[in-house]
Image (cartoon, rainbow, N blue to C red; front, side, top):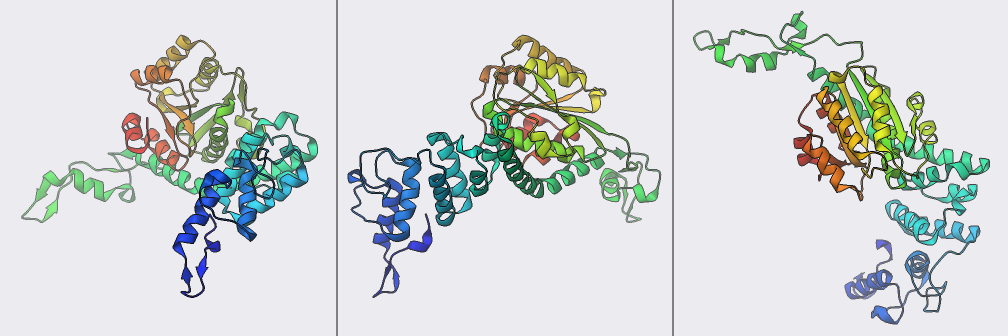
Amino acid sequence: MNAGNERVDPAAGRVNVADERLRRWRLVLGGGAADGTGCGLDGVDARMDAALAAVYDRGGRDDGTPGGREGGLGASAPRVARWLGDIRAYFPSTVVQVMQKDAIERLNLTRLLLEPEMLEAVEPDVHLVGTLLALNKVMPDQARESARTLVRKVVTELERRLAQKTRAAVSGALDRSARTHRPKRVADIDWDRTIRANLKNYLPEKNTVVPSRLVGYARRQRSVQREVVLCIDQSGSMAASVVYSSVFGAVLASMRALKTSLVVFDTAVVDLTDRLHDPVELLFGTQLGGGTDINRAIAYGQGLITRPANSIFILISDLYEGGVREEMLRRVAAMTQAGVQVIVLLALSDEGAPFYDHENAAALAAMGVPAFACTPDAFPDLMAAAIERRDITQWAERHTTL
């Protein structure tokens, strides 16, 4: 809660801890006879309480006092706009985002999000973008422009946060994977690794190491070194994953050493590779919701791979298969046997793994393809591990919860 409203004892000139504790409990419990605090609220505290009550109360009037109706914001756009302004004034942005998400889910405010003035008042975040994408096909043209502005703001912030780290991790992994034992120039020799590799050849009398083999950097290749296929489930539960995947897809596509493809799927498959230059356009090419045919999506993605031994296939899905399960597993097995590095992410988001099909996850793990949730901050290192062909199961055990 807002720490700026603490009670101060005028005589002592300090916070009255007991009163402050009661105040905080009163704001948490929501008032009424059942809260047991006996603490009244006024001024800013009363307005904060009313803003909370609108979403979380199940009894109370607009002024925060006990009454006979459930909390809510009604269907009035002006009232929702005032509420959005209040919560932005009284709470930090992280709390505002949670309250907006809860209001949309608990009070069914999705229709009001189609109005431009609502979109201009909300605090943009990944979850709100997911909600807007789900409404994409029914959104009026006027609201669509406001929604596009909001989505671009979120995407720009995500790129600022994630792009540099991703490029650095991937570029470093590509360089490390291009070691050679026959460097063509002295400048290409990795002296640290060369000395370590030849310590057995140390001559004490000469106080030197005689290298029997060199370790160096291969010439930086201008051609494509890895093919990356992102295959993204766009069912409703995967909204945040779709947003993050689109941003990462755009970053990877900007690197010339990678050939990046991105497809989204429900019961149909849509190839959005041609939109990777603009993640906002890419996101508006998705359609959240609907069924799931993972087998069909994997079949399409498999067809994009031309160099299996140098390819990384990333399936992002909760694994609830509406298609042919046995065929899906056979396709994954065929890719791994051909040398493709197959990774299954149950989610690419900050929230961890959602509900997912444990049976399919176990079947994939049995063939050496672990299924786990990954946070956006860990994804660059995951890509580096895949490029270097490290054991992804071990990586997941260290960095995530399987």
